[in-house]
Amino acid sequence: MLRTILLTTAMALALPVAAETRIPQSQAEISLGFAPLVKAAAPAVVNIYARRVVQAQASPFAGDPFFEQFFRGFGTPRPRVQNSLGSGVILSADGFVVTNFHVVGMATEIRVVMADRREYNAEVVLADQESDLAILRLQGGENLPSLSLRDSDKVEVGELVLAIGNPFGVGQTVSSGIVSGLARSGIATGNERGYFIQTDAPINPGNSGGALIDVNGALIGINTSILSRSGGSNGIGFAIPANLVAEFLNQARAGRSEFQRPWAGMAGQPVDSDLAGSLGLAVPEGIVISDLHAQSPFKQAGVQVGDVITHVDGEPVNSPSEMLFRMSIAGIGNSTLIRLSRDGESREVSVVMEPAPDEPPAEETTLGEQTAVPGLRVARANPAVIARLPGGLNIEGVVVTDPGPLGARAGFRLGDVLVEINGRAIETSNDAVRALTDPGRRLRVEILRGGQRVSLQFRL
Image (cartoon, rainbow, N blue to C red):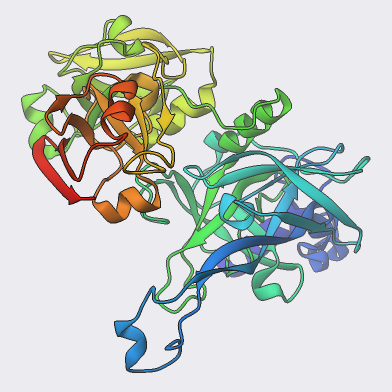
């Protein structure tokens, strides 16, 4: 009986004629299943074929069961064409398409194939590896079918959903399931800043970038990854919420090529049961602030170390990834209402969402061929630079923003702070360039790494 009731409800919701749940009006409606819904939504889901050129090392021991393990990385790097397959969703009639960064990132050629076999060349107009999202623009696309975006904050666990994509390249495929969980973070891709909707609708390789839609045909998420030991679907899939997709589309339309996310300028940790009592909280919730940068917009709004942030714009936050997600969907230039607890009392403050300030000037510089470490990229630490680096908020001095191939082999790491080079104090990027130009036959570099002083020594 329960199965019949659920099935009947699903068939009713699948009909696109109404946005509200209703009882099927005829046996014909019951027998249609999800067919009307799929017919309306599927044309807006596309297949994406991307090509990129990568440098691969051809080893004479490749494939050898014994010697290959001892000669990894052996051989001369050679360019090789790498193909990737994924899915995408048309967001507007004029050809804006959303997909995953890992489908099209660094691609030299992108081909988009629609359900009716029309093909378009596409270009990436905005991409962000951290969020694993990219916005494409179809060349010559107009009057295209598209999906509307639903407010993903209104999605509830237990809702019926459909996943549409191109798994394993077999062609457009539809699978059904429910929303299994919300606010999943740090478990789908290993990215601590990830924030996902969980579903049990089968998702497989090739579904990446495809649509997760509700029973009214609205997009609630972009399918991005699964948890699996075999590589196939085990009923635990993850989708990036539509609210973040909406902000990406807004920034793409504004002409940005890189996603701008607001800067918090603070560090914190989730409140567990041990912390809750000492902080005067009845239940474990929120994020306790452990550090604030001097230029943090939260500090300027009155937030203090020891405060517990519990809500952003009325939505609960219980991890740094949730906090970043809420800030990202608020958008640059907008104000957010922050609810916090201090000494057991609740209060609210308004914080303007702004990117990390690039002051004082970073003076980012890439060392040339005439230096001891060509390709090493350094910059003066400021909030914009710190936001890109691992480590704490209070980094000072000249930092490594990219070690480059030679620098990485020499032992430099992202975030290293250059203190001295051959006994010469390093205070600016130009100091580093001068010290590494004709340094003599020996090179000694003193750096700070994770708060520890490290010495790198070379014979040139």
